[in-house]
Length: 128
Figure (cartoon, rainbow, N blue to C red):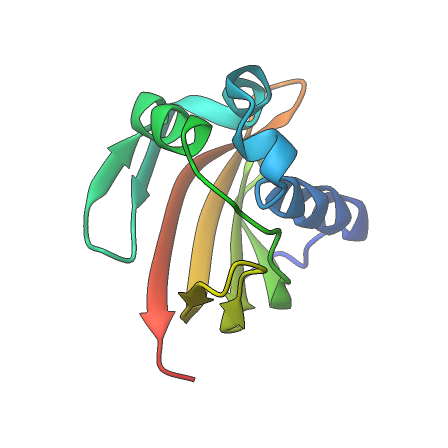
């Protein structure tokens, strides 16, 4: 049986997920290193695997990025110190005219004793 998410934890994790879409955070290796767990892994919408260092390196060189909107945010406890987040990002167009497909996202957040850190993320493109 799933444990109902504490509203405070849900708000913290929503804010952390939103921070990961902030261009200032995405381009700041120190800020990313604080949010990403050392064992972080990502499976991108491309099907490629990324480690923490891969993501820090890629995002540091990312060009023209605009924060995205998080919709249909849901959070559930997997255990006392792990929360799964699921949400949707609608299709969007950057200020420079680049189109981004919508996607479904899932993240696992681990409470390390004094803070929440993301340990796994996967994004899947959707047609709508």
